[in-house]
Length: 328
Image 1: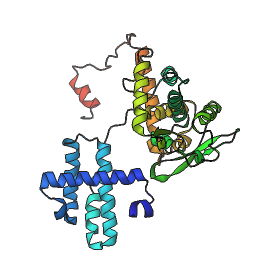
Image 2 (image 1 turned 120 degrees about the vertical axis):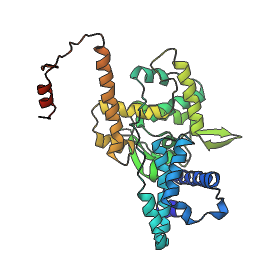
Image 3 (image 1 turned 180 degrees about the vertical axis):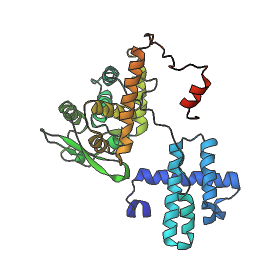
Image 4 (image 1 turned 135 degrees about the horizontal axis):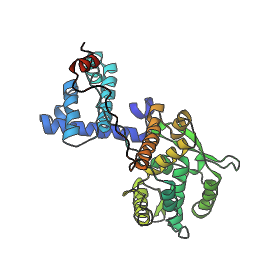
């Protein structure tokens, strides 16, 4: 009850913490022979957690960021336990002193404008399910939302304002933000509602995107989204070689973020729009845009023979070379 009630952590965060603890229990059992019944707080020593981090990295091939997330879960537990029993607070200090694993900058996968257009037009909107899939991708791109944020939208989260239509998204840590919709997206929304929610004004608690099983509506899952996006990606690849080999939902979020940044949106506003906790997280889009410019420049100048600069000193003049090296 502590995480969801007192800390107001989202269900996804709680699930992530549970998974981290189960991995730690697997590590203790397989590497140290300590079963569930024999676990004590001594198992949460800095040494054990450091070994756990190495186990995740070497045995499970987890990335640095994933290892750090698992450690954060254990650190949070140790801190909580230390506040309840001050004699155990030293364990929290030990875990806190463990340096986070360094990770290289993330590679941002995004779609070119032509690739995006082809992907969004792959669904046959004349078919009811294809219409749903197309609108899902349009809405996800327009709002730059995370896949789960779109899946969690209920009718009551939509503000039907013709001048400035917007919707509320609930992101990480149960933080809610309002995101505007473009006029074209809003028109797609109204058409979608006619087909899938004809009585949307009455049933405002229903999920915007759903599947029907045995006559009962259920919230659509990420697996469903990944399946149809992968299929559309395969269909579009022969037409547009620019498309990545594997198309997945998060690329739509990255694509929109890159387009907004290039369009002049300041990082501070973009960070808020994306629901990032820190502006530092948003800087990956500035880095990605700079890298793309550099690659374009290199490609454009690849065939140009640049003259090599020759040293202005005599390479056989030992005395001068030592002076230049600061040894004289």
